[in-house]
Image (cartoon, rainbow, N blue to C red):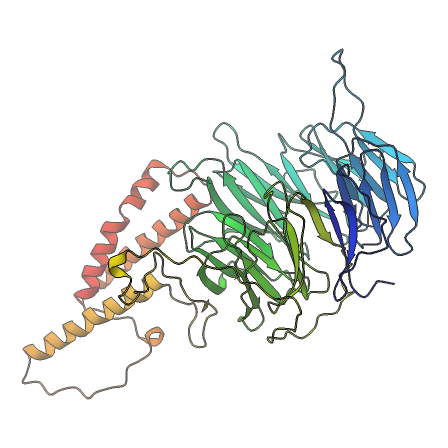
Length: 585
């Protein structure tokens, strides 16, 4: 049976220990404190019932529920630990060392049976990146990337390779979450003018030209991040380059792509230029949030058609975190930003609280969906290390600062399976707390002596955009962008001025009766009465539509012919010609 509140595991220069979660925050007796600085790594199992750590001599596993030691392995150099989803296997990794005579070194990736303590299999895994094998949630299949191939094992039998997925130069892969049927997304970087691509497959159908469920190719990708949604129906791909050749960004260039298992794919159009800081799926799998653009950054929620649903405006932020139940979203600005958090109710799109967690380097939601952990850890920051437990309404429930000569290296909540903690109704009233919330003092801007006795003028370098609901209102098909609205108003003003000029020229004619202004979207298409002009307008619109399609193809990475590029260059001339013809109507 699960405890009422999750535990906190803390690793630092004061040792390894556990802390009881809210409301007590006392040191837990589940783990006897490991003093000293030798603890290199720890991990919880996916359901939070097992805990493993390496203390520089051994790797130990304990049962969190009954506090009993299960196994102890002689692995003094282990720096990475990971449990399989159903706690059957513990994977351990230690740095690879080659033999002095040039032959292959000893295997450094071990897989242990958690029940018996025996070593099931050892592999050579030279790189620390993507060191851990990937399991399906029921552990029916397990996969590893080996020499540009993905090797699949079944039912934790690591002596027989059940299947192989071979593509030239597979760089990365991600198994889908959830039950059967199992899917896998693979990334192959481009070379010699060929584009990079991500393909989705359903296990074990890897053979044949039409085996892939979906395929998305693109240029401008040195590395990608692939994110499955919880229902395993779609993947978001963040493709990034190390260098932005236009010189607009120091952080390279990023694009966001959407790929669905039904074969659909799209480039997610982000309204603001600049880096993509973070992209996260909601646990409902029906929407995702992207934080992007030059500072102050925008944050927008998109649906599965990649249409914007809600725009949070601009602000100092570079990260997004959905609560485990998906009903609360935190937008935060950590790292080189001052730690401002915005806590939103994403069902009603209402701001709940706006706390500030200065100097934070780590953020995590508690499995109960109510509490938040923020921490300042080394080596990212070596001063003012400590952690805070918050309620999402903005109250600080617990605060711990380490002594000035000490550091925190790692901290995390005990995880729990979905459904253990039911979702609760969102409250907007800050919960009471005995810990004073010390708001950081904001340094006032320098004012020269001549201006100190004069009224302060509120001037900003950037005016923040307010939040905006992007859902289509009743009676309109799609929300118009700011530019489109501006152009529409301009066109209507010109039309009204022309009509006024006509009425001034013919004073003898009786004035037409004043009619109600018809809605924009129901206005009939104006015709000139001259079939030749109407035909020209129709042809121009046809050409502009074709240019728009060519631009979309270019955005997806397709290489255009010379004549197609020439067509795109004529767009401005065609638009001007169309505008002149329409104004003459």
